[in-house]
Amino acid sequence: MGLQHIFAMFLSNIAVPIIIAGVVGITGSDLTILVQRAMVMAGVATIIQCYPIGRVGARLPLVMGTSFGFLPTNISIATTYGMSGLLGASLVGGIFCGALGFSLKKFRRFFPKIVTGTVVLSIGLTLLPTGIIAMAGGSGSANFGSVKNWMVALLVLSIVIFLNSFAKGMAKTSSILIAIIIGYMVALPLNMVELSAVKEASWFSFPKPFYFPMEFKWGAILPMSIMYIVTAIETVGDVTAITSSGEGRQPTDRELSGSVIANGLTSSLSAVFGALPNTSFSQNVGMIAFTKIMSRYVVAVGSVFLILAGLIPKVGALISTLPQAVIGGASIVIFSQISLTGIEILTSEALNERAKLIIGLSLVFGLGLNQVPSAMEAFPGIVKLILGESAITIACLVAILLNLLIPDKVINEIPK
Figure 1 (cartoon, one colour):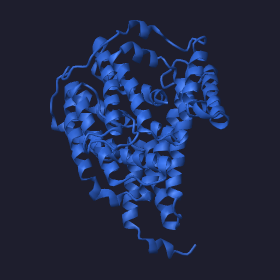
Figure 2 (tube, one colour):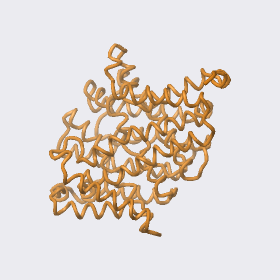
Figure 3 (tube, one colour):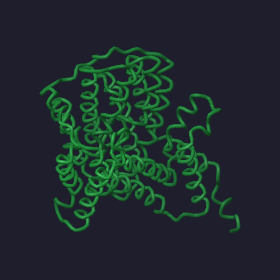
Figure 4 (spheres, one colour):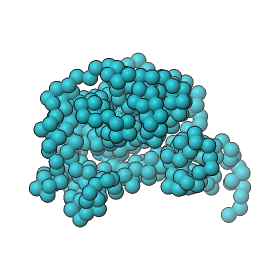
C-alpha cells in the first residue's frame, strides 16, 4: 500500500528537476544528482509530515514531492539567475513559508468550508487533464494518443474498478498497485518500457549538502516567496481533503499550521541538498479518499521506498520506467476522488444562494483564467506570474474575497 502512493507521485516528482535541468543546461551526472535529491528529500519531507518534529509536520499521511506549482517561477528564476540563484531563493522562501505556518491560526477564519471545499474541488478539476494526458502516453510522447496507450491505460483502469468493486481484503486495498503491476507486464512485450536507464544507473549514491552553490538575489527571492504562499494555500486544501475524506472532519489548527511549517522548512532543507521546493501531492490525497486508508504508517513506509530509490539509483531508474499510460490509468481514478471530496465538503452544509454564487464565480475565474492566460496580457508581470499559472490560487482568492464581502442576508433577500 505504501508503494501505491509512491507509484502515484513518482514520475511527477522527478519531472520538475529534469525540466529545470534542461533550462539551465545541466546534464550527465549532475542531472542524475538532481533527480536523486528530489527523491530523497521528498521522502524525508513526507516522513516529517507523518511523524512531526515539534511543530514541524501535520501528523497526517501527507505525501510531499517536488512541486509543479513552482515550475513557471523556477524556470523564470533559473533563466535569469541560474541554478545557484534558484536554490538560494528556495532556501529563503522556505523559511518565509515556515514562519507563515507558525501564525496560520490567525488566518483560519478566512478558510471556512465554502473556501476549503472550493479549493479542493478546483485541485481535483485541474488535475483531470493531467490524468488524460498521461493515459494518452504523456506530454511530448512520440506516440501520444495511440491506440496502444489507450488500451493499456483502460486495462489498468478496468482492473482498479473491478478489484475495488468485487475484491476483498488486500486485493481491494491494493487494487491500484496490482493494476499498475499488471499494466507494466502488459506494456513490456508491447515495447513501451525502456530499460537502458536501469543498466546505466549506479548502485549507491549518498547526497552531500551544497553540491550546487547558492546565491541570494532579491529579484529571485520575492517571486519565490509569493509562490510559497500559493502552495501553502494548496496544502491547506490538501489537508482539509485528507481529514474530510478519511475521518469526516475539518482539520485542526495544529494540523494546518504543522503542514505549512513543514512545507516551508523541508523545502529549505531540500535547497541545501540541491533539491527544488516541495509541497503536498494532491494525487495521494485522492488515493486516501479512494482506498479509505488514512494511515501515517502506510505513507511513511512508502516514503522509505522513495528514499531508497534516491540512495540506490538503480531502484529509482526501474520505477521511472513505468509507462505514462500505466500511471494515467491508475491516476484518473485518484484525481476524480479529489473532486468528489471537494463536493462533499461543500455539500456537508446546506447550499444557499450565497454559497452557490461564491462557488460558481470562484470556479469560473479560477478555471477560466487558467485556460485563457492571454486574457491578463496587460497585467503586471508579477500578477500574471501568480494568477496566470494557478487556477487553484485564483479560485481560492475569489472565494475568500466573496465570502468576506457578501453577507448572508443580502443574497437570501433577493427574490428568485
